[in-house]
Length: 159
Image 1 (cartoon, rainbow, N blue to C red):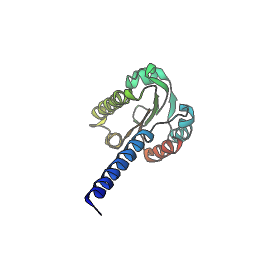
Image 2: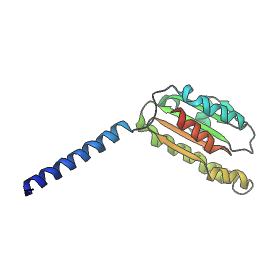
Image 3: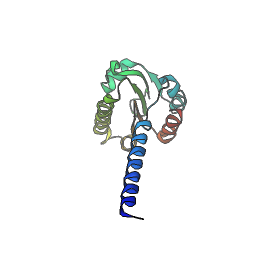
C-alpha cells in the first residue's frame, strides 16, 4: 500500500473512534426518565425491612438542606431510633447540573454524623464509613444501612 492509503486509513480510524466516544457520552449519561415512585418502590421495600420509615420533603430539607425546588421528586427513609444511622435518600433532579451540590450536602450530612457517632457508637460509625453515595445523570442515591448493597442493587435495577 502506498503512504497515502495508510494516512487515509489512520484518519478514518481516528474519526470512527471519535464518533464512538461521542456516541457513548451522549447515550450513557445515566439517570432515568421514570417517576421517582417507580424507582423507589423496590428500594422502599428493603428500607422497610431494615426498620426504616418514610419521611417527608420537610424532613429532607431539615436533615440534608436540599431545596425541594431542585428536584422532580425525592424519597427518604430513615430509622426512627436516634441510635441507628440507617437512611436511604433518592433524589430525581430537574437539572443534572445540581447533582454535585446535592452530593456535597449528602457528604456533609455523613461527615456530621461521623463526628457525632465516632466516640460512642462504633458500629454506627462503621456503617457511615461504608455508606453509598452515587450520582447517575439526574438521580442521586444515598444509603447508610446494614443491607446497603442490596438496597443499591434494587435501585440500579429500577433505573
